[in-house]
Image (cartoon, rainbow over all chains, first blue to last red; front, side, top):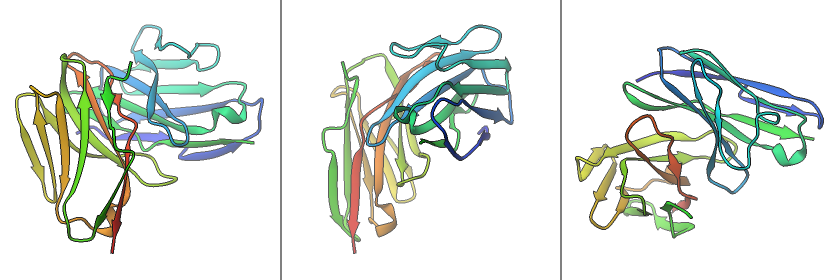
Length: 112
Length: 112
C-alpha cells in the first residue's frame, strides 16, 4: 500500500495565526481527502483535493479558512487560517489509490 | 442524516474474552468498509477492511463480518487484550474515489 508522510505531527499555535499541514505520498494517488477530528467526535470531511483542480469543500467549510493545494499527484497541503481555539483538532489526510485508502499519521493542533 | 452509525458509545470486556463492536449503515451504495482504532492523543490507525464481495475478513485476532442484507458489520477481537483499549471507528465508502464516511466511534475498555 501507499505510505503517507504527514507533517507536522503536532503543533501548538497562537490564535490568529495560520498553520500549513502537508502530506507527501510515496506514489501517485488520484484523490486526497482532508478530515478533521474534534475532541470526542468522529472524523469529518473538510474537502476533497484532486490534482489540477480546485478542492471541493463540504458544507460548513470554506476555502478562505481552509485553503488547500494539490500541485501534483503525490503532494497536498491544508492550511488552517486565522486560528481560534475551536480549531483545536486532529487533522488527517487520507488518500484513495490503487491499494485502497491510506491514512496519514495525523496532525494534532492545539490553538491557545 | 448519519449514514454510518455506531450505537454503542462504549464497551467493557474482560481480558481474554471476545469483543464485538457493531456498525450499521444506511447507504446501499457503500461497498467498502473499514475499521480503525484511535488511542488518546494519537492519530487514527487503520485496522482491517472488507469489500462487499466478501462477508468475512480475518487478520490475526481481528475479524470483520459484513451482512449486506442487514446493512450491518461487526468487528470481533479474540482474545481481547488490555492494549486493545481504544476508540474504534467504522467507516464506509462507495466505489469510485469517494471519501470515507465515519461512525462516531465505540470506546473499548479491556479489563485485566
